[in-house]
Image 1: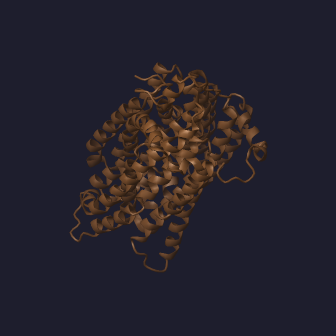
Image 2: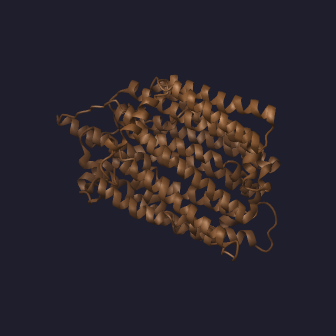
Image 3: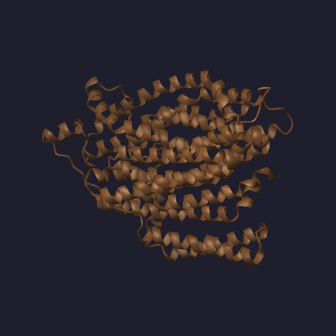
Length: 545
């Protein structure tokens, strides 16, 4: 077990301290700074979530359940393999660059970036080739139990996987480079490139194909290319922004600097690399299992039914990106009380922004699924199960990130392993008999394991928890406005479009009023201050800020 402020085996930082150099570890009150980063990330996450929902809607409407299921399963495979290629470096780079800056050793940040990204580039290229070669075999696994004598489904899946494989290195490297900018407390590149530009280009490309499909036959390979191609400009711009944030980051480091940082970096990151892959498996493997055990059409229904979950995950990721470097700095300084305060504040914001979505979608599941087509409305039970699970997950906040920033990456690994075992075991038992509903139950069980275990661990190791006044206020307000109020309206007026519109309007008004009345426990004063002083706090047009 490691103390949060030290690294097992020693590091360049420890050597630096032993030489007697004064290291300042001043950690200011970060609530306003986190609010600024959180606002930008939440806005970007909102756009990315809506764009992703738009992509799913266009694909579902344009291709139908069977063909859409092929694309969704291929994208899930691509995302899973990309997670392997990242080697856990996004977390490692944020952690180490933030720590180096806090300890006055920013000169080693460039060596850290090179130590992390070169292996990612090599592994990503190798995995892209492997994915291209293995595409026919993977297609045979994910086209379902139903006979496919003509090989139509397998051929379509093979072509889709091979089209995606060429973009895998760009996706892995772009994420690593953007993590380096977050380690420098620069949130704007991640928001602009990963939350706005990439999903915006994906939505534009898929929309163009959907319009074209109304009058001409669109080649099947065009859909995965339109989805994956935006990773290329994102990679190029991420490289430029990394250089703009700190030109020393992109300069080739000396061998001595690489040796000083590579060992500690990978000792921290290696467990997180495995945990990151398993985390991706938690989010994507169920789609592949549904496709394999119940067929592509069932996978499409399951993907569409759970698409709203991605919106909430974007919000969680946004808050996490804003708070991650500051958690690392506070924990490195031994300030667990300050880290706990940030954790509780961030959890309150997360509940405030995501619970309304989960409660509304759960209450009006049939209407939500009908937007994608009548064939998808059979997934209402799936929506209800997943919405309940996500209410629990967001109430725990970014607990896995807190555990990682405290240096407990091996604990994270154990937690994700147990969650994945629970999900796969339940999926294998239930999907053959119950279809996609079995996968939803498996995912809900995994979500519970992956949040309640680390919640107990941070309470034990750090003596912190997410249930502050802000979290409780946000949960109560959301449950009243988006749970009880819509239930009352639908009891009186039914569940049609008029009742939905009336419920949402009444809930939004009540929620806004309630949030303003509870602005102090919710720490909304920091958010409103940022909005009012935004022009002063921004650095006059610097793209890399």
